[in-house]
Length: 324
Ligand SMILES: NC(=O)c1ccc[n+]([C@@H]2O[C@H](COP(=O)([O-])OP(=O)(O)OC[C@H]3O[C@@H](n4cnc5c(N)ncnc54)[C@H](O)[C@@H]3O)[C@@H](O)[C@H]2O)c1
Image 1: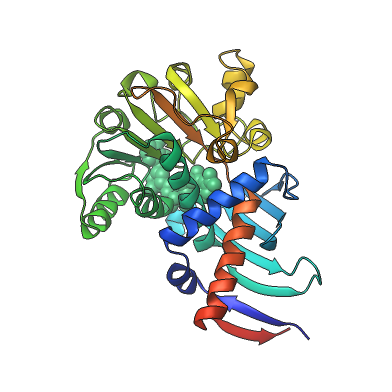
Image 2 (image 1 turned 60 degrees about the vertical axis):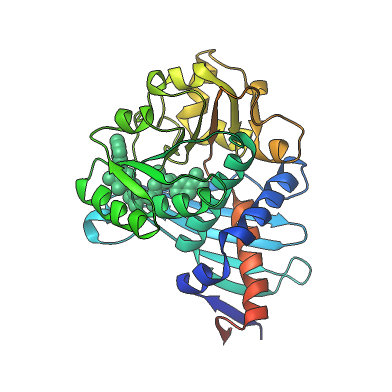
């Protein structure tokens, strides 16, 4: 009878700090882009008008992770998280279930770690304030992780919900940042050098004409085929465009698919984060350039984050066991 380790969101917060997780997620992307993982595209289904995903991956040296996740924007009105998930970790050789954990927290942690890897390679010498557009659940993790790599004191925030911007402002001030609430996304964009889009928008919130030089844009929202978080001008002005997976972004976001279909860019000019981290492709060409990292989220991130959490939990005796 397998003994399965249960890890709560609080356990994961204790176990997966930026200094550990960013490096592990970087390795995950490198393995993925080398073709060393087994990662079929996720299965997407629509339930009661909402997006559900089943995401599975085997990452050698880590394990097999399977996540069931949903994105329910109207949960904001119910006082529930927009993203809820459970991640299962299995031993790749025996197939034995090893752990079950809170996939909502794990998703936020691993997504933020990927954004931090992009900042490491794409904005190494960029300086200036961070702008955050969409200040909900992910935004808090994005700020903590990205600012562990990209140092700044000042954060500009914008959210269509005033209460979300206000509560995020308090959160960021408690971390020691000077925070300015902006009246529009454009105002935040034109005053910052690193822009994080973490919203549930379906239409562009980042307009290219407002981007400063140099700047680095991180966009984690707009994860359905026709949705866009930034406009064509962002694509036209970018000197480097990096994604988590070329295959996944073509299937799952309008931000890359639509500009390619319009002929504004070709897919061979879109690099993967793993190619950049391994030095095969550049993350930045000029000091003054504009760079973009677009992610939709990959199962490799969940498998690696879950496996690292499991390894660390055993070392530190965190979590609870159940007999299945
Ligand atoms: N790329 C990835 O790996 C990955 C992983 C997790 C979540 N996500 C995506 O991140 C996004 C945010 O998720 P969350 O869990 O923080 O959701 P959330 O509901 O907690 O926060 C989203 C925020 O965006 C705001 N918003 C919506 N439209 C906006 C607009 N036009 N301008 C400014 N703000 C706007 C909402 O008011 C809300 O505060 C979602 O699109 C989700 O799918 C991506």
